[in-house]
Length: 216
Ligand SMILES: C[S@@+](CC[C@H](N)C(=O)[O-])C[C@H]1O[C@@H](n2cnc3c(N)ncnc32)[C@H](O)[C@@H]1O
Image 1 (cartoon, rainbow, N blue to C red):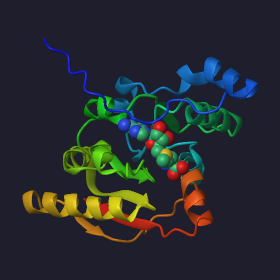
Image 2 (cartoon, rainbow, N blue to C red; image 1 turned 90 degrees about the vertical axis):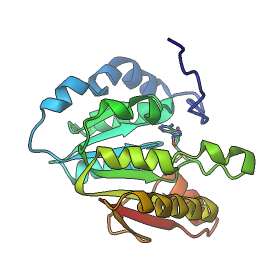
Image 3 (cartoon, rainbow, N blue to C red; image 1 turned 120 degrees about the vertical axis):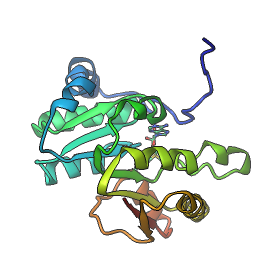
Image 4 (cartoon, rainbow, N blue to C red; image 1 turned 180 degrees about the vertical axis):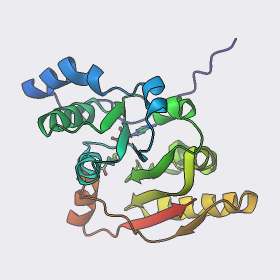
């Protein structure tokens, strides 16, 4: 079999060196937080919420503490963020978060169809240069895939401060809408999110933030 070695992750898996306490939590507790696909299939009567590219985990931690009855899965290969989530979740005794530290494209097929009741994609890398735009996470094919994994009456919440990426996603969604009628979308946000590193950056630079909610 020919292995598909196409590069799918273009971000940094590590930025600055981890503090001693982060290294401690990362090394000693990461395994407690890794998603166990067999176990989550057995969890009944809980809503599953996914955050793709959670960064430092501000929104993931906020959602998990605000909605303790729901179960949160965060996917991001960024080690500093993974270590931060593990430390904060452990210190706050949150037991409704699991993480996956590989690119989402590698694991999305492992989830059951009609599984998530909410999906957050907040400030994904905008890849602004023309040559790089094909790296953008939210494109036609990925949106089609993620919709399959979303339950009926679920929502994907997308936020960006990059107008070109926003317009690109709206265009991809309009194309998808011609193929399937299973979703509607509005260009605003009805779901609470918390400030993140990248929303703060946008606010500091007085940039507009664009929201899109896609309802299945
Ligand atoms: C610009 S940052 C935004 C982080 C955070 N959502 C925020 O608002 O501060 C984008 C994040 O997406 C993650 N990322 C990039 N490609 C990814 C992929 N293929 N799968 C999962 N996460 C990804 C990066 O590691 C990074 O943490």
